[in-house]
Amino acid sequence: MATEKLMLNFSPKIVKKPIVYRIVKDFDLEFNILRAEITSDLEGKMLLEIKGSKEKIKECKKYLLKEGVELREAAKGIILDKEECINCGICISLCLGKAFYLKEDTYEVNFDKNKCILCGLCLNCCPVNAIKSKI
Ligand code: SF4
Ligand code: SF4
Image 1 (cartoon, protein in one colour):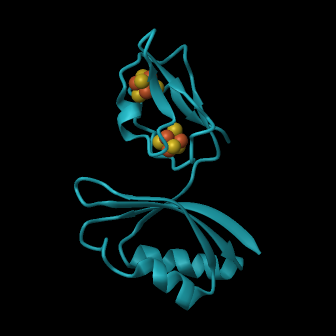
Image 2 (image 1 turned 135 degrees about the horizontal axis):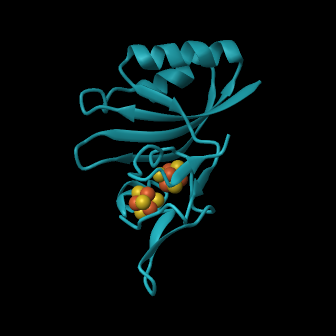
Image 3 (image 1 turned 45 degrees about the vertical axis):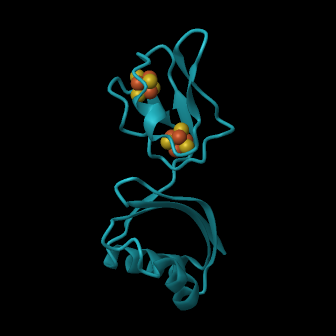
């Protein structure tokens, strides 16, 4: 039995399709929705943990891509490099888990790893590359 944590992005065109239902029905996978939201521009984001045989997970990923779902593996762990950070706040606005926050007394951006759900949305958003992923 294999387990994978995946970040799924649904464009407004496909956000109402019963795609997750088909994962259970057609691929015999166990799944756990760790986080899901629909953004203001009607894009769906879902952090999904799936369990099952490696072969079925592979088939399921193929199906998701065919349906137009953007797919990527969830991050392994996030590190904020305080030395590099310029406190611009970009990461705060897109963090799904609200793990990045502004410290009110110092106006510095901080990171609470206990709130991070490893969705990976913050990777590549930082203008000075202060957000890193553990390998
Ligand atoms: S995006 Fe980068 S520089 Fe801006 S607050 Fe976040 S970590 Fe700091
Ligand atoms: S991976 Fe990044 S965006 Fe996602 S919850 Fe963790 S800190 Fe926030």
